Image 1 (tube, rainbow, N blue to C red):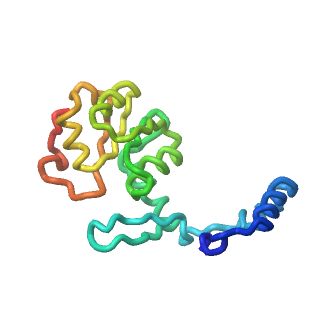
Image 2 (image 1 turned 180 degrees about the vertical axis):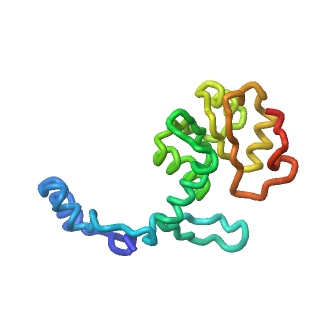
Image 3 (image 1 turned 90 degrees about the vertical axis):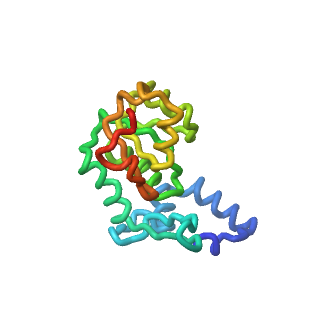
Amino acid sequence: MLEDLAEKPRLVERLAAALISWLLPVRMVEKSVGAGEKVGLDDIATIIFSSGSTGDPKGVVLTHYNVASNVEQPNQVFVLGRHDKILGILPFFHSFGFTGTLCLPTAIGMGVVFRLNLPAAIGALVSQYAVTFLLATPTLLQTYTRRCSPEDFGSLQYVMAGAEKLPERISVGRSLDW
């Protein structure tokens, strides 16, 4: 683990790292740290830590295949493109936010508006930036229906809920009064 290797770097190690980064060509530095090696689909891409809502908190290992397939799934269902815009309100430390609002726009090249989740401001942001795709939790969607004007959501084409059980009152085929 990286944290074990560099738990308390000595002054000499820090100076050596600084000199190497300033004096050596980028390719040599990359080669010395293993950059440029082939990465496989089954190699670890990230570790996301769960909150422990179904038990003890734990690190969840996601491979490149996990992330790529989670990014591709909404694109296959909704056929998203460069003309679409997504509102990024979900935290990146959560798999839904990481893959849906960070990786998906990057992979497709679509626009994204990032904002802290302040429910009263969400409707105005959707309207102002003509957001077409909203990823949210069912709890957030319920909050938006109470705190936002339905007119603010006129540009939305798709709403995708995840990260928790979807209550029947806002399930597929039901209106959120938008």
